[in-house]
Structures are given as structure tokens and as C-alpha cells.
Image 1: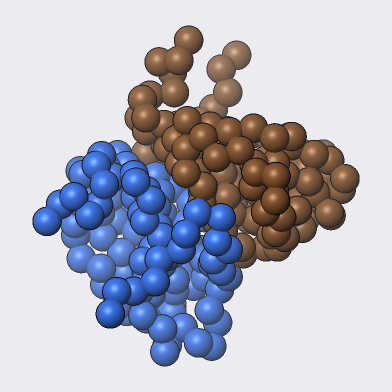
Image 2: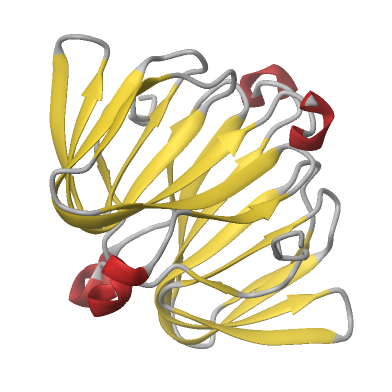
Length: 116
Length: 116
């Protein structure tokens, strides 16, 4: 069954999950022609290992605390309400210092369904 | 003087402004090659009248309460933590039902500085 993605104009909650975080999974919330928005769930000590994507991205911490690595040398902490962006192909990694959820918006140079 | 826009990897606060909202102005937070992120401030009863942009956008209410109009017939309320997206050229308008700030991410088909 295809997962539901929001339609234009449909309201999605990006509120903190709080106590429900541990029972939640990372989810794509919407895909438009060029944008994809998803919520990444990372429980304490969980790692989203080094990766890069073709287009620019924004990363917004919704709750918890994230150790955010850019390349080999840049390490910062993201708490709720912190946002940053990266250029396409910038390698980055995330480690949860506390249970956390993160809103990621990716610009796709072409429609994400056109990759297959 | 050019306004400061964030560099890749630079942390920006998108926390609620709370009591500082009344003294704040709408601000562009970052411009990458294809993305522009800004915070729109609307005090109670203020209106951002009907408009449209060429690329897809996401709209996230950070605080307060917004009456969000899409076209002539679709009216919804956005509270803190509500997000939606629109296709390019979809006309929309905002009215603040309470002091509010809203995070808008616009996909630009071409670099925003190329529009001069």
C-alpha cells in the first residue's frame, strides 16, 4: 500500500512527538514536484551515518538534541528550533544525544519519482 | 548594507519569538541556489494579501494563529506546528487571528538573485 503523502493545502503536524517518539518511525510527509519533506526519528545514541543528497536541504530540529556533523571537522548541536541548510552533495551525519525528531526539506533537481 | 543570510551549516533560530514578536520584522533567513527561507511576522488582524510565487512552497506556523486562504474557497487555520505546501502559482493569502510568525520555504526554479 502506498503511504499517504499530503496534498497541496493539506495540513500536516510537525509538532514534537514527545512521549510517542519511541513508537514512531521516520516518515515522508510530502512530495511535491521539487520538494520532499520528511521527519527523521532518532532515539538517543542512534546515528544517521554520513551521506549526501544531490539537492540543497534544510534541517530543522523539532525536539531533542542532535550532534550534527558536516564533513570531517564541523560538529554542532541542534536543539528544538534550530535550523540549518546544506548545499547539494555536502556530506553530513546525525547522532541523537537525546531522543529527537528532525524535519528535513530536500530540493530535488527533478521529481523524486523520476529516479527509478 | 546587505542583510546577513545564513551560510551553509550555520545554525539559525526558528523558535517562537513570543513577547519579541511585536518588535520584529519579516526576514529572509537564507538563500541557497534554489531555496529561500524566511520568517513572516503578522500581528493580530494583519493581512498578507492574495499572491502567488512561481515555485512550490512550504508554510509552517511557528506561533500564533493564521487564517490561511487558498484561492477563493479554501480557508483553514494554522496553529504552531502546522505545515502545508502549495504548488507553484497557487494563489494564497494569510490573516493573523493572533500575533503570529510563519516559516516559509520557497523553491526557486532559478537562483533568486538572477531575477533582477
